[in-house]
Length: 118
Image (cartoon, rainbow, N blue to C red; front, top):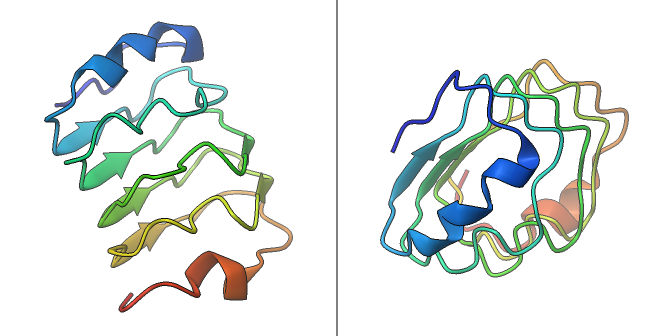
């Protein structure tokens, strides 16, 4: 599903949790400033998530809890921090793009300790 460039705000995407069979979700170039905790948990088949070009500044420890993506794109957000446990459940992650952000530190051992390939 592509919802690119629609001016969506963080509070307007809660309804997406009802799309439990979704495999790909593109939310690029909207006005997202954060991601509601557990939003993606019901989406057990979600493989690709793109949040490129929003205004998300941080990713908390429970934002992607129980979410196992294969591809995760979050470039161009002005992202300042990613909690060390944020991506811990992404065992199948093989492609990630965090370019064009403002990350100063990244706790790699915890972020990628469960990855089989990248």
